[in-house]
Image (cartoon, rainbow, N blue to C red; front, side, top):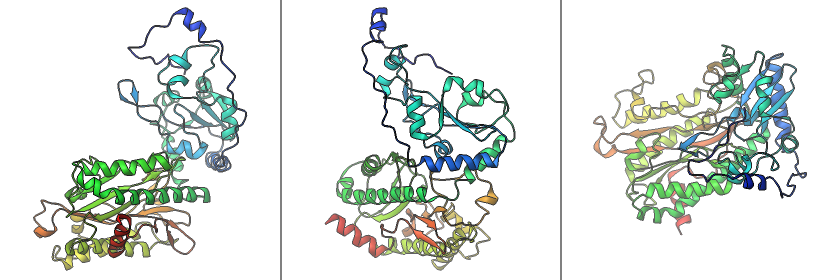
Length: 463
């Protein structure tokens, strides 16, 4: 599976003399200090659980490939979550193979040798001089505690039947004929991540704590952001700095939505001004170096204080979130917290005279709130999405699951069913929680949720 050299159209030609010169005179930089990742003990247990679920079968889970952003410029690589969950590794073009015996091997593109070939200095996509050093096979084995094999040997290893996690690496898909059983592998890989172990909960708490600091950074930067013609983008940059300082990146594209932009659920253009008379909806999360992400939303008064009308809308959403959180416990149905939140929303809209009835069966309330009130959280912001409905959406909560609770109201600026004064207000409040033995723990408790607490928090940060 070795690729030809990835060189640019404007690269200078290499003479025979230079080619020969480049293969000599290099010090030995092999690493002998590699220690197992703390995560390695957990990934070994996860691979064993996967093998036990499909005994006697070969299972194939790729890490994914580099993707071009423009011409010969790639996006920063982010490995597939199932692959990293099972290995702890994050490099492109790697493939985990669990053999019918249960033994696992990691097929990888190791560091290219300096004494032969030209990849290390000529290949723009993989060369060490271009993108940095890769591990050799021995180093990778020591780090990840798994047998490591050169990726060129993968075709021979996949000569027989196998289940493949498809859609991740087209070159791997092509090596094994597709089968209906592949979808069962994808479902199980999602379902085995529904309950987090103690290492994962700690990693998510780190991401939440870093995100909290990112929100504090944003509040401190609001005066400068309000003065900038692209205030939303200013906020995005401030939070992005925190995500890179304390983690891998943002866990998803930050939503920085001021005024009526907050009525667009996934507003990521982030190119608007900040009006001090309006609200700012910030939905953002730091992704840790091990790729676990937080997902928190706060809706903040840009003036530092909610107007009476803004507080009215905010308090209704907060009441809905409180009702949802109160349902969280082992054994509760996953959909229960959403229904509890929506009952509060529907009754509030009825009390305002917006709806003639608070009947949930009619679904009319959804015009103003649209989406579900939460989701599983982990390596993906919408974690475990390939899980079967009976294990997730129609299932029950278990101790160790981590999820978000995020009711919202999105009162569109052109909605004639609303009083004019309500149009263009969007509010979402989102927190991350872990299910405990007798309820749920609010992982994002360090960020205030109530309107008066938010005002006091902002005042303290702004001095």
